[in-house]
Length: 395
Ligand SMILES: [Zn+2]
Image (cartoon, protein in one colour):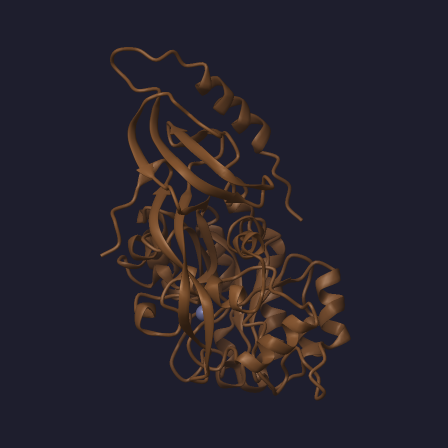
């Protein structure tokens, strides 16, 4: 998919920083995250390492860094991962969103369709004002997410208004969102998706669709997707999910993945997944490419809780920890060009770090249908660094 073409220049800048001579007035580094188990799938690292940060970027990842730093984070016994990237969030709904999800380790997020053309300016202002890297998908419906279903009236899917919103906010809008479930689009699902593609095409941007109990069958929907597009709520139950009547993943779904369609978890609250679909798909090896929360400021009190809780659901299904982290960091960062340098602790990259604790015990996890499953491990957010700066601790 996307290349990391920016890294050569960035890495050179990082190397230059390492040669900086310490002096009486300044510490060598701004921050060192010391002694944690660094798991960075982008680099193939799973080892105890110190991570040094200078001028907002990763300066060194080494077994032991003895140079002085202005600040340190003691990460012994903890996991040190690249900052989490949540590609299906609603963090831009209010200005409280971005700083709140930052405390969960989320250093990058994509608000997936809260706003359509009518209010995109408001979303863009919140994305630009947040401490983490925030981007938006413009909803193909001019109203954005709306009660009663924003696409029940297909005239709301106005291509020229959506294009105008993208053109006005090229720096923040990274794609188009279309919610295609029965209770959002009714019989307009395919036409809404066609219009989303039409809006995105001149800008060469991806479309994210939300599936679940749609009127049209999965194969008709998938036929309208191009490489790089994203299917969120991938484990939505029948009718018209990814599984056939015998619980097998449709061949068209496997074919869609082969041609570069991204399948995203999208936890959410209602109608988006149940444990049965997750289990059947996981057993067939149909794992998510990316995890996401479908987060908003009330998620603490839902089955989402926080991004590390969503990640933990897949530990319960036997996914190895490094794979869980890959889906929350580098895989997610590769979906949108704006996150090219994120999802990695590569030297020279912006210093976004999530310090997590993996606790053993008995943890109950919720699907969207009040179904509970009990896992033996749960990841908890401990500390977050964004652009080299320590976030305040979570209350
Ligand atoms: Zn959503």
